Structure formats: C-alpha cells, structure tokens
Length: 260
Image (cartoon, rainbow, N blue to C red; front, side, top):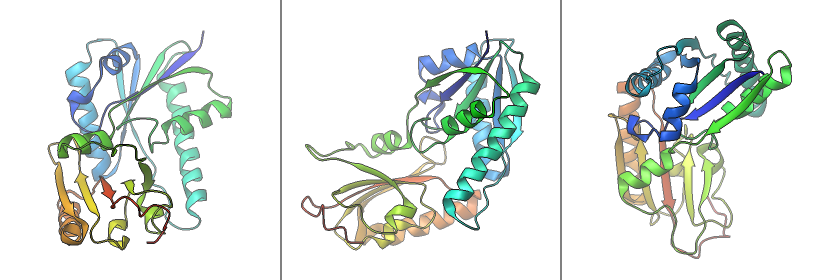
C-alpha cells in the first residue's frame, strides 16, 4: 500500500460548483492541504475553507495550511515557471512526509479544473520524480472559469461548426492565433484584448467569476475595451488582485490572416 494524492477540481469560485465526485473525494482525504500567502491566496484559501465547512463531513480529516512561494518575474519565463514548480514540489514532498502516514490520502483543492491552465498535475509528477514519496494519483475534474463566463453571459462557447482556441494574454499580445476566429484568453496580466486590431470583434469578459465579487462586460470590442480596462484597474486596486477570463469573437472569415 502507498499514499494516495487526490487532485480535486473545486470550480471557478461558487461553492455550488462542487460536483458529487469532488465532495466524495473531499471526504476520502485524511489530510487536505490549503495554500495561503498574499491577498489573492488569502481570498482563495477562505473560499476553500468555505467549501470544507459546507461539504466536509469526515470528522477525521485534517486541514493544513501552507505558504506558496512567489514566482520570480525576472529572466526567462519558462525557466522561471519551471523553478517555481520545483520549489512547490519540494514543499509538497515535505508536507506529505510530515503531515500524512504511509497509507493515508492527501487532497489538493484546485481552483477551476486541474486539466486547464493549472500546473498541479505537473508539480505532483515532479514529486513522484523526486523518489522520496510513493503514491497513487487520482484527478477529479471541475467547472472552469470559461464555463462560468459563458453561463453568466448566457452564451454558447462555440459557434456552429467553428473551433475555439484557448490561449494566454501573453500569447495573444504577440499576435492573433492563426486559423482562429473565436479565442478564449486566460492569465492575462497585460490586457492583451487592447492589442486586437479588429474593433468590430465581440468580447465577453468576466473577473472573479463564480465568486461574490464577479463582474462581467459584453459588447463590441471598440466600444467596451476602455470600460473593461477601467473596471479591471479599479477592481485590482480595491481587492489587491484580479483573475479574469474572456472570449473574443471575430466575424467568420478572418481566420488565417494572423494579424494582431
């Protein structure tokens, strides 16, 4: 027998995003690890605790907080991310060995869905590669911010017969994805929507999706880009952090032009 690690998708922010599978996984865990540090992490940690208060019925489950190191912003982006992941992996190794027995189950509560622009699976595989901890791994999917955005704006993610590309703000700022007319953007710290040269494109934008802080805007990009930028700046100033996601749609036929 060995330990089991459960990577549990907990949804985009609404505690009612929890699936029955996720609730059952929560209650299988002997130990739940909750990340803290910084205003954003404090808010997300509180939301995780709210989920535990609502759905955790196993009286023997232990909850342990841990601090997340900051990713360095200097140097090569890829190298910085890789170093950050390995630093978190070392924290996981130590916590698993210190906080759990050799046959216990450890739960990691992941915002949104563990398979979409989240690195928990990769980090846990770094732990496995380190050789200090043997474990079985299970992954439970969750509702994404993309789903929460589309539900909030009452729109379908895709148009009939057309693909959707999912990318980051950093990549969109380098140019519109070739072959795409519908683009979902996540992890945008540079307001990349302002770099899109088509003012007639339609944008559906949302921040803090699924949480009580949720704000959304939809409209013609040329009409609402400045509004989104202003709302984003005010929200960041008020709360100290922001997480946003948006969908931009161009008129069919632009795909392949690749302009920014």
